[in-house]
Length: 189
Image 1 (cartoon, rainbow, N blue to C red):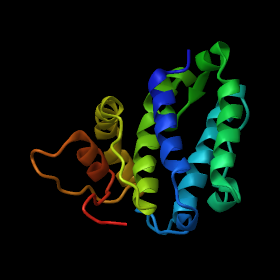
Image 2: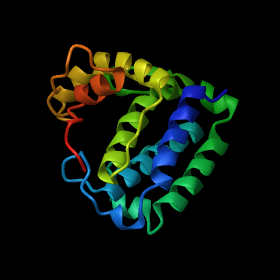
Image 3: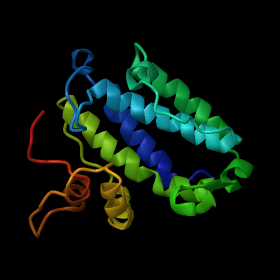
Image 4: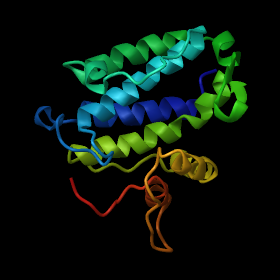
């Protein structure tokens, strides 16, 4: 069965994606050097990676051009790629063992249980880039924060994450998650 949290995170991203005003696709995002359309393309490309893992295809060796992935209508592209990926998530695909970094191996289903972390952070990035306020799913955010605390040091060491931001002692999980990923929640779009 497709992890329910993965589906909820997909739904949350789609809600923000579908609400992007037409004139905001070229707005700068919190991801250095990326625009809103780049965030959309990156997340869409991620769904293609999920599908490739589900059907046993080789993964791309290099990142694609995120804007090309998003296409002229990122919402339509997302919905088509999401439907294609979802159709590939059969029980046997979810049970398939997949290799990860650091010589780890898990089932696709186990990997998808952790995938909301990626979706949540980029949901916020897209919302911030396009002038939307978003409250991330609290249950998913709490789980993602636990996962992020384990893997953020390695991601930072590999140059994939910016420096962690300081937060108030009473900060909520969403603020803590975003700060862990170097996002400045006080900046406005």
